[in-house]
Every structure is written in C-alpha cells, then in structure tokens.
Image 1 (cartoon, rainbow, N blue to C red):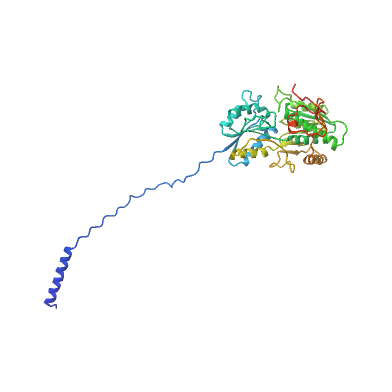
Image 2 (cartoon, rainbow, N blue to C red):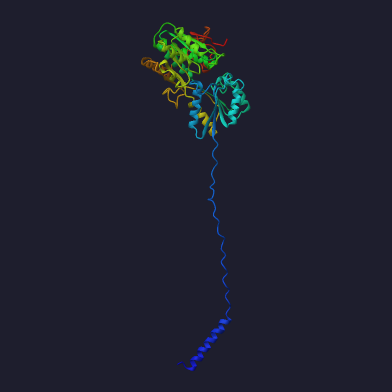
Length: 423
C-alpha cells in the first residue's frame, strides 16, 4: 500500500498539471478548407487554323464550241493542261464567243462575266477577238490577259500596244506543221492536185496556207523528183467554221475539190468537214484523202481517210505564263514558239506536233520523217527566190524571210491559186 507521503506527492502533481492547463494559451480552431466549385464540362478547345486558300481561277473564251474537234477543243485542252499542273487552280470558260452564235454579246462582255466569276487570268482564243482584248484591257489594265494568236505584245510587230502592260500573246510556229501537212499531201497525191480548205483571209491564214504550199512544193520536187508544177488551190469559206447563210459551206467546198480531181484536201478550218467528205468519196471507191488541223485526235473521225494532222499543244506555252501570274512574277510576253525538234509529239515540251493517221502509207510515212528531219536540221523553206502571187518579188535568191515578213505575209505565193485578200 502506498504511504501517505506518496499520495501527497501524486496529489500535488495533479494539481500542478491542472493549473498549467488552465493557464495555457488556447489554440485557434483550424479554418474550414475552401474548395472551388465543380468545373463544368466544356467542348474541346478550338485550334486556330488558316482559312482555305482562295482558288486560282483560269478563264478562257473560245470562238467555237469546245467540242469542235479542232481549234477550240485544242485551246480548251491547253488550258485544262495548265490548270492540272498548277496547285489550287480551277478553270472556267465561255464558248461560241462569236457574232453569229451570240450577236448581241461582245468578247469583252464575255470576259467581264468570267471576271465576275473570279477569273485571275483570261485567255482570248482568236484573232477575231482583238477588239474584245482592246476593250477589256482598257477597262481592267491590271487583269492579266493572254491573247492566243495575237501580236499586241510584240515590240517589233505592226500592232504593238505599249500601254497594255498586263497583256501577253501566245502562238506556236504552226508554219512547220503546215509544211508537214503539205509534204504528206504531195507525197500521197496521184493527180498532183492539192486543195486547201481555208477559213477567212488574214495574216495568219495566208502564211499558214503559204507554208503548206512550200512544204508540198519541196516534197513534190525534192523528194518525189517531179518536174511539173504542183497544182495547189486555196478556197476560203469566210469564217473559221461554217455559218449557214453567211459562209461558204465547207462540206460543199471539199466536195467540189474532190469532184474536180483534187485528191488531197488540206484543212485550214476549225472543224472536220474535210476528212468527213474524204471518207464519203472513199466509200464510193475514190482514192482521196484529207489532212486535218488543230487537234491531235481530229483524224479519229475517219482514220483511213486521213493522212495526219498538225496539231497544237497549247499547254506547253500557257503553263509557265499562268504559273508566273499565280506566283506574282508575271511579266508581259510575246511567244511564237518552235516545235521541240527532239520529239515534236512530246505533250510536255513541244507546242507543235504532227500525228500520222492510217491513210499515210508506210513508205510515205518514212519519207515524211525524212522531211521533218530536214526541218529539224535547219531547212528553211522561207528562203528566196520567192515571189508573191502577183509576180512581185518577195525574197531575192538566197535571202531568208524575217519573222515579220512571215507573220505579216501580204499575199499568197506564186504557184498558188486562190484569193490573197478579201474581195
């Protein structure tokens, strides 16, 4: 049992502990923890993106329908080629831009419509559109315009327009293609009579008809070694294609050629009447042929009746110009391009080609290749002595024509039959 002294000590210690507890500073109660209100669910944050790029729009006006299997088809497909190679490019067009199909609308008004639809560059595809080019560029001097067959941008040309800063001209030296056409005709003819189905009369058509004659005359004399002159006749219908009641009917003109003993007809118009009529005569047992124009597949209408077709690859020259417009590096240009003589049928490099058809014999095909090789090697058929149709001198012996003399040929050449100017 504890002693009294021990209980006394324990009692004192308890009392002292109580006293100390009573004197201690009270501890503040902990503050309640404040929590944020629950965060409401939200949509995923929006990531900033660039707005879609505006399309680069190429506009083209075609004088005829884009399905003519000739000039307008070739022009349109050239624009399609350029559009396909340019990132983000789109193509819009207006066809039948001529006074017969649309007598109350000018080329300039059609161009305004394309501009309203967002066109960044507008292509005019015919010499007939020169007034439209002039009017449109005067109203929109900063809108790039490409005039196929034109010469307003040619500083050495007769129609140079120095104030048209945004206008360029594009053409190819189809004179070479026409020489090939003339040669194919001369190699094939059995009568020595070649007809040329011409469009309307201007500088372009005169020099193309003359080039066909030069090719025919050379191959007749130098490859076939014929001594009698070749009979080369031109008949103009009055427009690029048939307009009933306005032009001569190209079907009737071709028919007359064949009836009169011309066994080859070279087409210089935008459509395929020459080869269609040749097929009709062949179906009747006649040994006749045609040479088509403009479009690579023009002979597909009647391959057996066709010797071939000199054609355009417009995209070769259009692409770099239109690309420069999109890139902001565009400068005004005049383009009159040569074929790619290493391969005239390369669609990416040669603006001029010649596609042979089933009517051309294997022997004559080889001889035509020989002639093309001579042209590639520097043969210049625009070399004197050459006279104009009226007998006046065009080029003295050994003199080569300048580009200006060829482009602005004022008459057909001596040896050709047909009108040189519109009567």
